[in-house]
Amino acid sequence: VLNNNMRQDVAMRYALLAYENPEAIAARTDDEQVQLLAAYGRVAAALAQKGAMVFGDGLASPESATTVRSGATQVVYDGPAVETREHLIGIFVIEAADLDEALGWARQMPHAIGHGSVEVRPVGV
Amino acid sequence: VSVPVFDEAFWREARRVVLTRILTASGGQQAQAEDAVQEAIASAQQHWLGSAPAEPVAWLTLVARRKLVDAHRTEARQSALGVSAAQERSVPQRPQPAVSDERLRLFFGCCHPSLDHTSQVALALRSVGGLGIPEISRRLLLSPSAVEKRLGRARRKVRDADIPMRVPTDEGFAERLQPMLAVLSVYFAEGLAPTRGEDPFRLPLCDAAIGLARLLYSLLPGNGEVAGLLAVMLLHDARRTSRVDEAGAIVPFEKQDRARWDLALIEEGLDLTLISLEATPLSAFTVQALIAATHAEAQRYDLTDWHTLARLHRRWFELSGSPTARVGEAVAVLEGEGVEASAPLIDALEDLVETPTLGAVVLSLRSRAAARSGDQTRAAGYLAAALDSAVHPSDRAALERQQRSLVDLCQTVSSESFGDGT
Image (cartoon, rainbow over all chains, first blue to last red; front, side):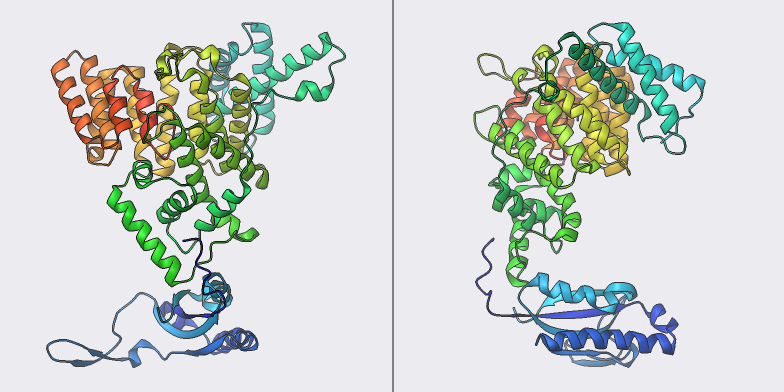
């Protein structure tokens, strides 16, 4: 278990999923929104500079979501797939050497600092 | 938790209790002991303005003892001029095992914050510590299959998320401290009461755990939790030589020859207990150190301060929710106040009967209480049930030696602790 460095040279891909509770989103002023986006811009620029950025963007609110659910008959309905206390509001996909490096980027994201939380998941297992 | 009022009555009572506890250490010299207690109280009255330590009487006892030891040293120096200060200060120590720095690094590596606490501890013990599933399951109070499942999941996550097993940077240290302390205490506990094998101890594990705890303390000097853990280890290790008789058989706690306890280790353990007591907030390790210190302060088994032990176990439970602490409280009340007073506490342990390993201790405690009240039939029944539920050979052996003390029995089982009376 201690020798999982075989993929050392091959960068892993990680999804950084930003979550925030809806009250905080609703309470944000336009100025604050601009500041938040600027803060994300700085993280994205740093990622790009390291060549670590694969994709990153914010998501529109869950009310704008449409879900296609499997079943006896496939159903399309209005709303997100899962109702959660915190909403998924942004996705970054990055390349990193290992989880610690990915966590290092996650810690810099505004939602890990003062707005909510950032979930880190390996992509493509 | 009641907050004591520091009035006249408190100081009078504290003076009496502390004096009783340290008289042994003074070699019966009452005047010196009284001076030491007086100095400790004066120091407390000066320093406690605003914030008294969590366990005031324990604090006074430890400080008074410290003053007494210092007084003895000064006296020795005056009567034997020519002894260099360095020689005088050097406490006789057993040879220290070579500290395996690499092992500490690897342990830290396994305690990655992306794994949950139990998985961190299990992974470190299995992958680095070399303990098997039976040992880990017994120590973490989990079934073997639950441990396997945890380990499997942890390993998959390490692989899939590519979790690096490296030593953390400075800020990463703090978030890995809790699992590290748990790993070291399990390691030590397993050395004191091995799950498998014929030997009563696995001393290399004890030595390694103490060495690593010392190293950790040198990295985090003054840290209350590390000081507390190291204190517990030393206070238990001080009894090492009295644990087995010449034939190699285990000597029950009640019957140990306390004159053979290692006084230098006890002294060091008590000093660390004081350091840990002065740190805030009060940690569960500090309370465990106080429990071990209470045993160390009793000159004979029948002088054990069970009332304090019962209170400390309650405190431990409040801090950590430890099921072992509940069992320890029931033991202390049974020993200190008798069958009737302990009955409600023992009855309340019903929910632990099914817990792996700890369940056998609860049944055995019931058996002991029944025997004390003269009901040998019920006592035998509970003992049989305890044997039935004991999975590990060493637990069965301990149960079969019913003459072995409850204090030892608890100690063999738990995990979270190796505490006497726990």
